[in-house]
Length: 147
Image 1 (cartoon, one colour):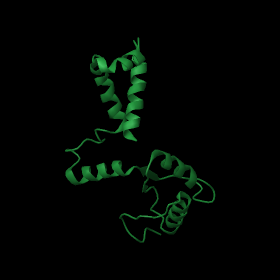
Image 2: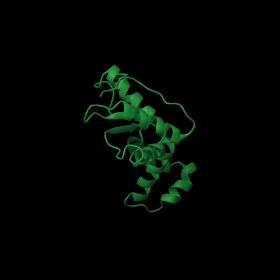
Image 3: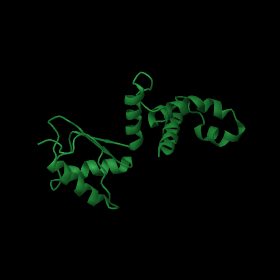
Image 4: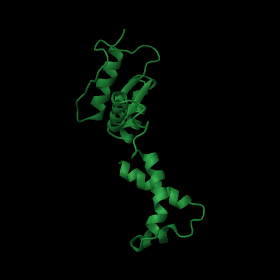
Protein backbone atom coordinates (compact mmCIF):
# COMPACT_ATOMS: atom_id res chain seq x y z
CA UNK A 1 0.00 0.00 0.00
CA UNK A 2 1.32 3.50 -0.73
CA UNK A 3 0.60 6.85 0.88
CA UNK A 4 -3.05 7.63 0.21
CA UNK A 5 -2.37 11.34 0.64
CA UNK A 6 0.44 11.44 -1.91
CA UNK A 7 3.52 13.56 -1.40
CA UNK A 8 2.98 16.60 0.74
CA UNK A 9 3.13 18.04 4.19
CA UNK A 10 1.14 16.57 7.06
CA UNK A 11 0.92 18.19 10.50
CA UNK A 12 0.02 16.40 13.73
CA UNK A 13 -1.09 18.56 16.66
CA UNK A 14 -0.69 17.76 20.33
CA UNK A 15 0.99 19.17 23.41
CA UNK A 16 2.12 15.67 24.44
CA UNK A 17 5.00 13.96 22.68
CA UNK A 18 3.59 10.52 23.46
CA UNK A 19 0.37 11.41 21.66
CA UNK A 20 2.31 12.72 18.65
CA UNK A 21 4.28 9.47 18.58
CA UNK A 22 1.07 7.47 18.62
CA UNK A 23 -0.40 9.51 15.75
CA UNK A 24 2.79 9.13 13.72
CA UNK A 25 2.99 5.36 14.31
CA UNK A 26 -0.67 4.91 13.31
CA UNK A 27 -0.16 6.99 10.18
CA UNK A 28 2.98 5.07 9.14
CA UNK A 29 1.20 1.74 9.70
CA UNK A 30 -1.79 2.83 7.59
CA UNK A 31 0.32 4.48 4.85
CA UNK A 32 3.63 2.67 4.38
CA UNK A 33 6.12 4.07 1.91
CA UNK A 34 7.66 2.08 -0.90
CA UNK A 35 10.65 -0.09 0.10
CA UNK A 36 13.82 1.95 0.69
CA UNK A 37 11.90 5.25 0.58
CA UNK A 38 12.66 7.50 3.55
CA UNK A 39 10.01 9.20 5.66
CA UNK A 40 10.94 12.81 6.47
CA UNK A 41 9.86 13.94 9.92
CA UNK A 42 10.36 17.50 11.14
CA UNK A 43 11.23 17.76 14.82
CA UNK A 44 11.58 20.74 17.12
CA UNK A 45 14.97 19.93 18.60
CA UNK A 46 17.83 17.44 18.54
CA UNK A 47 16.61 16.09 21.88
CA UNK A 48 13.19 15.38 20.38
CA UNK A 49 14.89 13.74 17.40
CA UNK A 50 16.79 11.39 19.71
CA UNK A 51 13.71 10.61 21.82
CA UNK A 52 11.53 9.94 18.77
CA UNK A 53 14.14 7.70 17.14
CA UNK A 54 14.34 5.53 20.26
CA UNK A 55 10.60 5.67 20.82
CA UNK A 56 9.72 4.57 17.28
CA UNK A 57 12.09 1.61 17.62
CA UNK A 58 10.17 0.23 20.61
CA UNK A 59 8.18 -2.97 20.11
CA UNK A 60 4.80 -1.28 20.65
CA UNK A 61 5.61 1.25 17.89
CA UNK A 62 7.44 0.26 14.70
CA UNK A 63 9.90 -2.17 16.24
CA UNK A 64 12.71 -0.51 14.34
CA UNK A 65 13.40 3.05 13.31
CA UNK A 66 14.80 2.83 9.80
CA UNK A 67 14.31 4.83 6.62
CA UNK A 68 13.48 7.98 8.54
CA UNK A 69 15.03 11.41 8.10
CA UNK A 70 14.41 13.50 11.20
CA UNK A 71 15.36 17.08 10.51
CA UNK A 72 14.92 20.46 12.09
CA UNK A 73 12.53 22.81 10.26
CA UNK A 74 15.33 25.25 9.41
CA UNK A 75 17.34 22.49 7.71
CA UNK A 76 14.32 21.35 5.73
CA UNK A 77 13.54 24.91 4.66
CA UNK A 78 17.14 25.36 3.51
CA UNK A 79 16.85 22.24 1.34
CA UNK A 80 13.58 23.55 -0.10
CA UNK A 81 15.29 26.89 -0.88
CA UNK A 82 18.05 24.95 -2.67
CA UNK A 83 15.51 23.04 -4.74
CA UNK A 84 13.57 26.18 -5.68
CA UNK A 85 16.47 28.60 -6.20
CA UNK A 86 18.89 26.08 -7.64
CA UNK A 87 21.47 23.86 -5.98
CA UNK A 88 24.26 25.75 -7.74
CA UNK A 89 23.17 29.04 -6.13
CA UNK A 90 23.14 27.93 -2.47
CA UNK A 91 25.62 25.81 -0.51
CA UNK A 92 24.59 22.39 0.80
CA UNK A 93 24.67 23.55 4.44
CA UNK A 94 23.37 26.78 5.91
CA UNK A 95 26.19 29.21 6.71
CA UNK A 96 25.16 29.29 10.36
CA UNK A 97 24.82 25.53 10.85
CA UNK A 98 26.64 24.35 13.94
CA UNK A 99 29.66 22.74 12.29
CA UNK A 100 30.55 25.54 9.83
CA UNK A 101 29.82 28.13 12.51
CA UNK A 102 32.25 26.48 14.95
CA UNK A 103 35.03 26.74 12.36
CA UNK A 104 34.14 30.39 11.63
CA UNK A 105 34.29 31.18 15.37
CA UNK A 106 37.62 29.36 15.67
CA UNK A 107 39.06 31.46 12.83
CA UNK A 108 37.91 34.69 14.54
CA UNK A 109 39.13 33.82 18.07
CA UNK A 110 42.71 35.13 17.60
CA UNK A 111 41.33 38.47 16.42
CA UNK A 112 38.97 38.72 19.40
CA UNK A 113 41.71 37.82 21.88
CA UNK A 114 43.65 40.98 20.95
CA UNK A 115 40.74 43.09 22.24
CA UNK A 116 41.14 43.97 25.97
CA UNK A 117 37.46 43.33 26.68
CA UNK A 118 38.08 39.64 25.86
CA UNK A 119 40.89 39.36 28.43
CA UNK A 120 38.91 36.79 30.50
CA UNK A 121 38.56 34.68 27.37
CA UNK A 122 42.29 34.97 26.64
CA UNK A 123 42.99 33.95 30.26
CA UNK A 124 40.63 30.95 29.92
CA UNK A 125 42.43 29.75 26.78
CA UNK A 126 45.83 30.34 28.40
CA UNK A 127 48.70 28.49 26.74
CA UNK A 128 46.50 26.50 24.37
CA UNK A 129 49.36 25.67 22.01
CA UNK A 130 47.54 22.85 20.20
CA UNK A 131 44.29 24.78 19.84
CA UNK A 132 42.26 22.04 21.48
CA UNK A 133 40.76 24.30 24.13
CA UNK A 134 39.96 26.95 21.50
CA UNK A 135 38.32 24.33 19.29
CA UNK A 136 36.15 23.07 22.16
CA UNK A 137 35.19 26.65 23.04
CA UNK A 138 34.23 27.33 19.41
CA UNK A 139 32.10 24.18 19.37
CA UNK A 140 30.35 25.14 22.60
CA UNK A 141 29.65 28.67 21.34
CA UNK A 142 28.31 27.32 18.04
CA UNK A 143 26.12 24.88 19.97
CA UNK A 144 24.67 27.71 22.09
CA UNK A 145 24.03 29.86 19.01
CA UNK A 146 22.52 26.89 17.17
CA UNK A 147 20.09 26.33 20.03
